[in-house]
Amino acid sequence: MTSTREHRTRPETASVAETLRVAVQVALPTLAGGVIKRRPAALAVAGKLQVDRPAIRLLRRLRDRHFGRPLKLRVPGRSVELALSGADVKRLLAGAPTPFSPSTVEKRAALSHFQPHGVLISDAADRPARRRFTDAVLEPGRPLHEFATPFARAVAEEAAALRNSATLDWDTFTVTWWRLVRRVVLGSAARDDTTLTDQLERLRLDANWAYLHPQRKQLRAQFRERLVAHLGRAEPGSLAALIAEAGEDTAPDQVAHWLFAFDAAGLATYRTLALLASHPAAQERARTDLEGIDLAEPNQLSYLRACVLDAVRLWPTTPMILRETTEETSWGPAGTTILIFTPFFHRDPDLPYADRFEPELWLDGRAAENPALVPFSAGPAICPGRDLVQFCASTMLANLLRDHRYEQASGPVLSPERPLPATLDNFHLKLKLID
Image (spheres, rainbow, N blue to C red):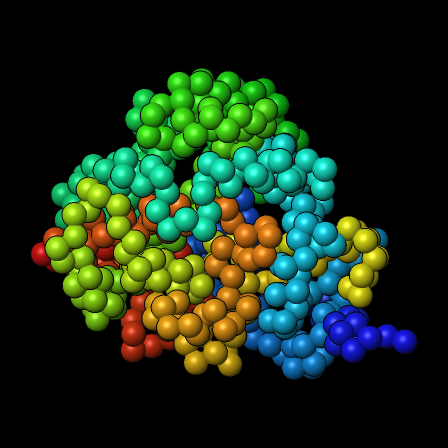
């Protein structure tokens, strides 16, 4: 007899028309924008068309029509399911790495372009040791990293250059952000090594195409050689020093993934600043919280962290979370790919805060009550760098806001008086310093 749990999660089968709509309105726009490396031109078009809005509406209709059950898509030669309920999101993410593995066909094809031995795409035998190494260096669950003091000072030094600009755009911000990232991960000697991150960017652009683009092994070898040289210095006060202590043969692959993830953290930080610039009350609260704080020393900055979390809720840096079954489950046979489209769950029209900036929900317990709000994923495969990212992002924001106020100068309207856009093009968003 089928258990109640199995009955509740037994998939329904999508029609051909429904499958096509999911492909056209959900999958294709996500892929076009660049899953591994954002494409500015594509995101500009997506922002003008607000492509996430019809995708959210479609999934809401499918959820209502199919009673929130998983939806089996009609994909030739593949078993593909679409999650439509928060309860299923919780179950899927809690079930990593078995029976719901984060290592999927698509991820392996994409990430192997620059980190073939990364923990995210490791098999069940190799994953535990690589995850332990990652946790040992990044220290998830610890609000302040053991190197928070040198990291805070690096943020303060790098942010100083941005505070001298009357206007701030993405290109200016990202140059400073990458200097900070290279210092945090590899040490101050790597601060100006733009070649390293340019090489990684080229590999990530290839990775957008996954198995449709041949791997550039020579470029990957050049990138790895340069990265290993930086890691070999084990510069004190950087993650490289902890990497040397922990010891791990695949450390360069794990670090390549951290650099990739820090790019998304930069997007989140800049988008958060744009939200604060366009929401005066939130900006003033953040500034008030900074009074009397020495930003050259590490601080919790709870409100700014909540602002970052809500920016990622509004515009997820990982819009599609994938899982692959390692055995037969109620979702289908082993090898079934399961899709979680995070913008749908984060912007569900039934949520009273769906389309507004509301960092308080990360402080008052409302976010914790909703298992489908997963800005850094969840479960055993939750992002191990989540606390370090929030520390770097909030500390950067604190340094920018401490003595200055910002307003939005151009780009889509971000106002507390109207619903926020479902898709945000940060590449063409400008801010101005007003005092």
